[in-house]
Image (cartoon, rainbow, N blue to C red; front, side, top):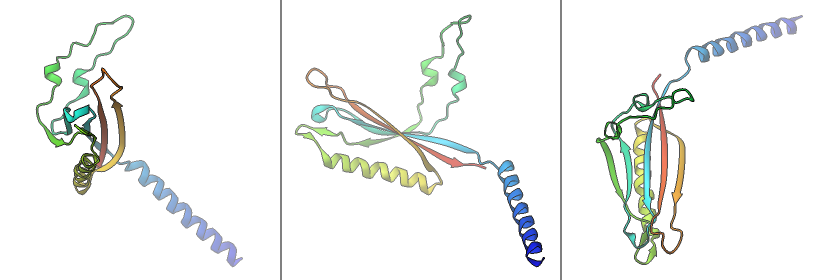
Length: 160
């Protein structure tokens, strides 16, 4: 009989605790803001490309430049490029992957140090790295002197 009472009390306490946790989760779902850091590293032979880390400091609302198209209404988006363009941003110079002699590993290590510094700075401000996305348009042999390596770091910060 004593064990049964203890079991019922434990079940009641456990149920109350679980219900309180569910109520807290339902009413206080976190809200986040996001920030993007884009790293563009040149892979143009002979080191003639430009490598940069870009951090936007000016906001844009995608809705201002978005239109809906359908079969009935197929008018193209007429947003002005000059209105979309951002003038306020941080631009950090990075080193190119290649120099005259070929691939330069010291440059890659230097870029890693600079990018890591930015990531650490954002982390100290409460930003959390949420996603990383990268792409490459690489040098494909004679006649193709273009190439960039782009990495986007998406950070999030809880606001509520």
